[in-house]
Image (cartoon, rainbow, N blue to C red; front, side):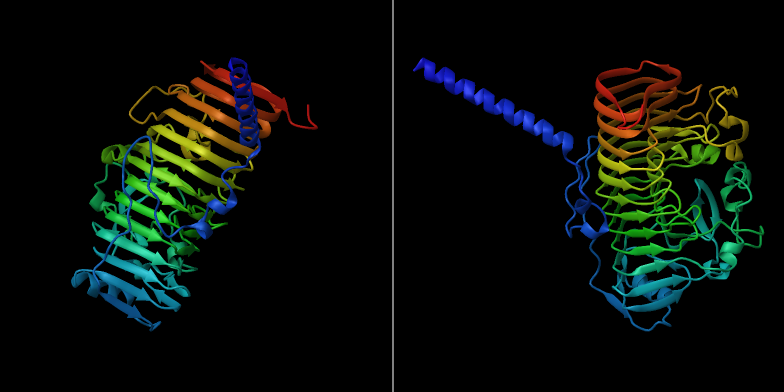
Length: 491
């Protein structure tokens, strides 16, 4: 009897070992997440629970008063109807199929703007249709200018939903008078009071262009299902907002300079899911103010979850920065695909802009990128920051010295890249405490690291043409259970 028990135990252990080997083989070969799990085309109707190692939040659909106005006349004054709903205590403005031309729209509390499938809102190209100027934040600096095509300030419980489309301004004074001649902090000076920073095309001979959707100082913001194109600036930009849900949107701004897809500005408790983005700049970016103006405001972007998103063309699939003065923290990005962007995950700071971030987790991400897969770009270019872009230019630690730390990257699949890991830190503020685990990386180069310390790479495999480590001022690099192989056909 004892003999049979031994045989049974042996067979059981053998079965477990074979199963474990098969599981490891599946894990190694399985491509995850799959295309049919990400992007707007695969958005489920229900909002699944959110799990983050940093915070707890319950994201739910908003509820509005059972009051509605239906728009069928393409000459209708949409703002007048929105105001009527706001004055009555809220409700839904239902825009039926058709092509509507409109000036800036402003939402009030408890109001939903719903665009039926086939409904298109095309926004004016003229500055006059965005006046009077409103309080906004442009590239991380507070000022008064055109605001947004759809704007709200201090509202609670607002929504923009449906399968309709938003089209930004075309050729006209908005684009003709957009400020492009200098970086913003040299135009909007930090010592000038905010209420005197007025850019209406008359006080100064230029304006700061409107985003497509930019609520500011709002709570309970819900954006779902719509498509956005031809933006004059960033597309969706919640600023100083709390409890924001952005799901199932499609952004098409390819070829548009500064045509960011979704930018979260100094906001908290944010869920971004099942979005598809093809942009002329960063696809999804997390920001928190710029330079001394950002330090004055000192509001972080924190407690954000990004999941099940698909990014196509763009500068970065998910970008932190470059405006991070108030810090980026408690961010969880998972189950996304970056297919065709220049960079996969990008961290941007600049010596004159301040901030940085910590407690950032990226997990279960698949990418096919043109340049760097995992990129820290912390010095910038001379055309924007002058001599500060050179690491050999000495700068003492000051209030505007940015710093990134406590970053984890787990289960990242890099199908194509020039650089799997490319770190360009700051000499006086090295990148620190970054852990890479279960990375399957393929690219031209394995690792380039300047001005970084305490990096850990474990349980990973890299298949690259160049498997060397190119480093300057790199300390504390540890690699555990890391295998390196030459890219097939190259030495």
